[in-house]
Length: 417
Image (cartoon, rainbow, N blue to C red):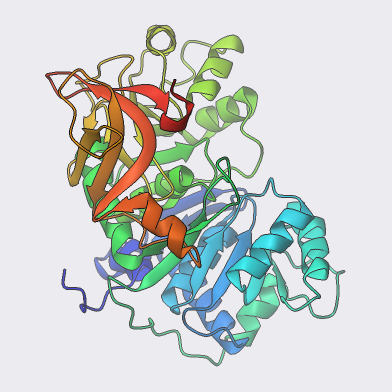
């Protein structure tokens, strides 16, 4: 794909399936029922037209402070479609923290769902009320300046629904880092990166196919959850299952029984919680493969879970800066206690503190290069320069690799003695 080839990630994820004649295939299962690809495409186009009619221009930021519902997905894809930059942010933010991100991102609009409307209103007030608020519901109430989901669609009724001519290299969306190592920073990602992670991890590691149904414990505002619940299933013509509630073992068990997912995405603490909840042994009967990320999966936890539920877990590591997982175990090739081998399309190396390669079996700082890396942090020039060594990203993790190419995590580099 040339840097100047027209490419829009919204088309790649939704319209492409409709154009291929798969419009009647189920795309999303959520609290409001099942949406086909044709229905999702229409909702995304209406959202894009509505944003355009309300004055949003290409490359302006739209912060998404929402529960995992169809409107969040349509808002994300609709912004991509009309060339704007969606910014999904954590729904765990307080009003002061959200206000800081609205100011930092120079947000043009804020999209929120009923669960978080009060916090969103307070954040807008703290910014001086300059950011219009779009609600995903149509219930009465709120300031006159607030825009309901229906009003958004009505505003765009006379607008063009054409795709904005973005390139693969155009900025598509931002993801804020967790802030565990300082103030949250916005990692900027390109339209082409969506296809890159879908083609490399989604197809070549997960082996995702149209018949799959994906369920993720991690929410859409996480890089991990965004891939699991949007980029991978939609790119393959598969189905995503959205659950707005907090993912307790009981909530997830109910969703598993009701929707029968085939791919399940969790984190080690959740897999441990599932075991502690003593759920029935057939809870994961529909699941053909589980994935884990976020922190290393202990070998003992892996063995206990797979023995109890009879489904394999592939552990991996990704980052906000890389968009998704770049190092992972693979189906049928799991080495418990390790993070696996490099995902196709990514190069990894271990270096010492002088950025010189270390021998196999020697701990080193993990560096990464690949086609989905962030183009940098928004308005953080020095931080961006410090994070990269040429085309290599410093991950901040210490690893050791064996002679079969399996990497094992030793911790964060700045935590090592």
